[in-house]
Amino acid sequence: MSFNENVTLDTSQIESGGRGGGAPGGMVVGGGIGGIIMLILALIFGINPGDATGGTGQIDPGQVDTAGQQSANAFSECKTGADANKSTECRIIGTVNSVQQYWATELPRYKREWTPVKTVLYRGSTSSACGTASNQVGPFYCPLDKKVYLDASFFQILEQQFGSSGGPLAQEYVVAHEYGHALQDQLGLLGRAQQDPQGAESGAVRTELMADCLGGVWAKHASTVPDADTNTPFLAPLSEQDIRDALSAAASVGDDHIQETTQGRVNPESWTHGSSEARMRWFLQGYKSGNLNQCDTFAVDSVN
Image (cartoon, rainbow, N blue to C red; front, side, top):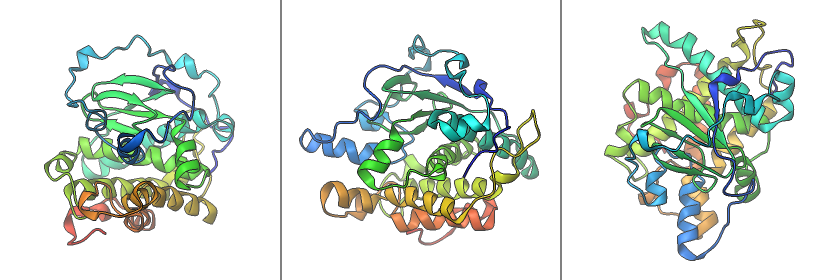
């Protein structure tokens, strides 16, 4: 899904986290069972990395080290849609712009207002109110500081280790999914994941699949969402290849696929995000309907 080249990117929606603590794509796979467990946790879109790193996830936001966070000038090379088509980090910024503009326009139809959510874009590791963000944790939305954390090297891991497509919409799907969690938080739905955290039909799985569906809703309308400066849509219309790219990313982060790849066996009782088939199906549910009301995963008997 390509950006229209003349659109303007708004880097003020992005914070730059720490860029040390590891080279891009530097996840180490291995190290015994601990490494395998971390890999399983890391390569799924989480919402509380404290659980993955052994922390409580209840760090006081006032204790977060912001010394490594820089101004949006850190992304001064990301100015236009043309830059987003060339650079992964610029593509993330453009997707954040598009997703936020869409929900800011859409929610008033339901008498709700979208609260802007920053993305902390980093390489290596950085601090969050939910614990340490790193390329071993993967992308997540932190409900304690209301920010999305994303290491651009995650896309290399997703592609090289788990077989995802490297296409643009595969990457944009990840961003849209995390902003789906932000929307759930603003609508008071996110807590259901913690109340019922494991199992094929659990609240956690239903919360994740809802975020996939919300990402699909954005994708349906993305080619109509304009930037503020030029009034040109951020993104060109989707192609069939774009949809295949998004479905490839969704399939690569299914619990069954990750368990089969890392453990050689599948255990639905431990699922937290849903099967590959379910993740693809719920993304398509959002994309085909274009309606967030069709994303109520808690209203159906079975989601997998």
